[in-house]
Image (tube, rainbow over all chains, first blue to last red; front, side, top):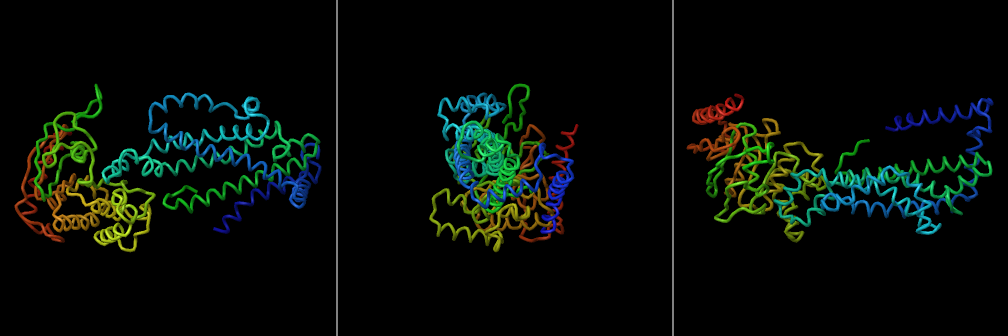
Length: 251
Length: 247
């Protein structure tokens, strides 16, 4: 297990080494891409000085607020759609229409509605995260085995309690997969939303460093975001395996 | 009893007239697709007949109820509940206090020999163990009538034999009425005091046979000539239907 985990990191190390070698030999000019070493040094500096911390907190506050709103709203909406045909018919065309729209393109409109502060950013993040959660919940709730519903009814569960006792738990594995997608989307949309108007946040930082040509610092923030996103995903999966040990998750 | 509508309509059952006495163990055999399970789902109240009616103790069946417990072929356990949670499900739904529930669950865990597996999840159990849990889950609700839909059809021969003995033992001890659907003629004879043979689709009652000898638990019924003759008699009846269905 440990050897396998170590082996997995080798391609990444090779890529970084190739990057550094290309920069050092002049094959990759600094004007095109700063060297890995410069980026790493820049990141180390930001972490040491602590300047990245308030930006991280601001960003994850927004992403978290949008994400949790989307999970609560998405699960509720998905369950309602799966159980009540009228709601499905009413909501489905709207969702299908919103689905292909690049959510960051909605930011200017949301700013007019909600102001240029945090609310418009949170709303865009929530909207973007909502879709995978709704779709996963709807599919999960729809594909509940009839035998489980029959089984519950035969053992005394009344119709109105089936949702809580059977449909929701049976749909949880699929909901969990939708939520995982939403985590990644939250980070993507977060950064775009902070490009447009923000005084704080990791997206703002990337935009600000890029604007003054500090490419090493800009890339340092990108790598920092990637690492945080990866860690978040790992933690989520680990938590899921613990809390939902009854389900055999694919690795 | 019909499924679907228009051109896709399938007639699953036709003019079924069957009365079942209390404390009987009735097995229903017939070729695949003859509507055996449909008949059971009608009694369970999961399906409504398109024509005709079903009565239980003189009252029409309008839906599922805890007086009728059902064991499905498989995949009917709640995957998110442990063995303990699954067996206690019906009791918890009734609002039974935890202490009393635990006592009944423990009793049923012992009944189906699953001591030591109380805290396992269904996916961690073999098919045979899962069906034991399903049986215990159903029995714990204290039904008067046990409906079994090919409950051992997916199990290997040895496990099936052991579980058949357990079901017979439980039926004898609790004197519950059992309605047991199977495609396995030997199983039908080994368990049923009365055997109903259905025709190929649309299923009708072809014949009803009383078993006039006893089968004891753990008996090597292969050695019993009466058993073999009776089994052959029913097998021929079923075979006629299978061949008829194949044209």
